[in-house]
Image (cartoon, rainbow, N blue to C red):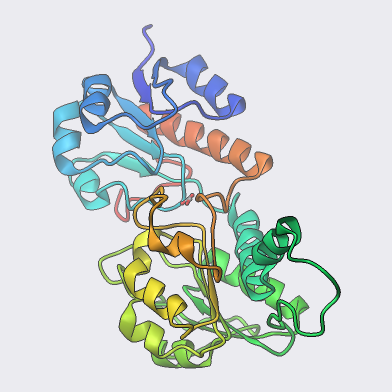
Length: 323
Ligand code: GLV
């Protein structure tokens, strides 16, 4: 019996890829950069399944152009804002994602960014390397303390809750606002507040919300103007949640203390972007989930989702609300 044809848009860790190869007739995109829209379509036309990355965009037109035999789009990511999930559901196409296995590693990274920005670690490293370090100084590179500080979480899903667990170990107070929360939370470690209160009271504000129409640029000039002058903003969710022009102004005018961004709009952030000229920002290249263990598990789940979809079964991690 012939194997189902699939397009895999980038090399993924071996364990998952081997599983895909055992079950499918694979066309693998071997480029380091994502396929263009035309290239994506050229390779995906006629396939029954696609295993893709968050850099590959799938709208309804793309799904139609691939053809009615398309059964499953398996995303190697938790966030699925690169896929029009409503359009997929309307066409009976399953969409898979890879939650849980990257929750802790992502929270670790967000916490690391928060502490690095608060304690100015990259700036201190440059200081030491540049020869500016002449002696121990009582007031050099003064930073912020975690103990007793308020951690604000925008989004209280898996990663938000993992942040609250970490914050307990640092004796922090934790508050959160979750635009998607439908029922009352049962988490003693964090107090639900209104969005305004979150902005006004957070010493560290960490973003853990999916990108939706409601959350796009939710952190813009107005929100930033309500934050404390000593606040640190951290984003490990999706770049467009923060308006970078407004953030640049707030950081440049020292209206907030610092920021740590693992995600930006656009990605990559161009080298001539004004944010790169500031000392009070850390930018990392969308690597919060980047541990070997997490990426191996993501590959395995993405492969399992793909294969289940090809068999017409419910995906182990199905992102469509109604499939
Ligand atoms: C990474 O950003 C993911 O959504 O998995």
